Length: 77
Ligand code: FES
Image (cartoon, rainbow, N blue to C red; front, side):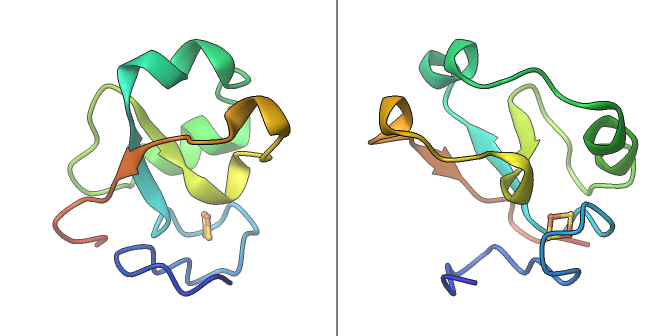
């Protein structure tokens, strides 16, 4: 919804497309909640999944995540 280049988010955050995949920098991973079952299932379909892959729509931002750094895949599908 913020129009970030490289995050397509085709399903609008419903955890149903995996086109919002981002690579979370390793130092931030311990601060994120664990990958849920639905997110894990969708990441199976994500292109170029890597360690640190998360679906951006499933990361609830909070003050402790201020400054969270992610990179985007070269393509989303
Ligand atoms: S926007 Fe579709 S899974 Fe995140």
